[in-house]
Length: 405
Image (cartoon, rainbow, N blue to C red):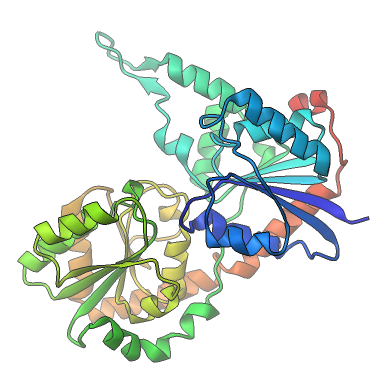
């Protein structure tokens, strides 16, 4: 009898890293050996969702308890888990949105439960302490105590928690007192061949984008959201133009900030220097044409866009946040700058624009890093070992064992 795997995923209207991860790990479960089910929120409208719907059984379930009464959400999830009776449940996303699914799986007697956390939400954004007036030292806020307790109990019911960077893993262990032996780090992976093969058509792609031979092309890819920090990149390009630096910047992606970013570009008079490309399915081609990749994120667990740039051999200028410093060594594959610091971002880009020899050196380092620690084969091998190990364990776990073992 085939093993049953249920993957619970919360995504976006636009494709994000968690959806790309979803496509990658789904290849680990051949359909002739496993019965694969997915539970998506009704708000998910990505192309990945459409592709999966054609191949697997998909349940639509608004499981974010902040958008649906918690009792109704829990009952819906409980019914899904009891109907499928999965041997393995993979929660793919943010722990905040997964609180209801985690408890529904635990109390319904579902099999082994693994959460893959792609965001550094608690490590980066949780106000664990708030400094109160009249006190020289910050004290725990009521909000932080409630939040830590609820999240901690929920995370404790899981059999395994997978993080995509070490920094977030260590922060969670410390903040929520999760047993370290239940936590693992598996870096995201990328297939370098899909990007390196495009280099031979570099000049063709640059002509299509209107980039001259004497112009340096900077590229950023990702959803147009506040956390990506694109407004700081646009401001940095404005400073470069004021200094007479010849550079063209392209931003590929879609999202709710498209209008405001376009307005910023026009108000700064950067219509010829910064272009919003919208959603593109030819990112390897864009990277082949690029000289510099920019990631001015305010928070980033470990972005696939960053790994794609390395796989294409493009030097990187990125914020020193989240898991980025675990990928980029300052001065090796690129430069790290403080988030929101337009001046530092501008200087790092200018240094690469003015030094082709340095770009070439960093390009070689980037390729070596991508094909080593962050290869798709390495990520899939480590993920497969972890998932198969969980499947080999007991199918059902009692609530007592779930909480205390």
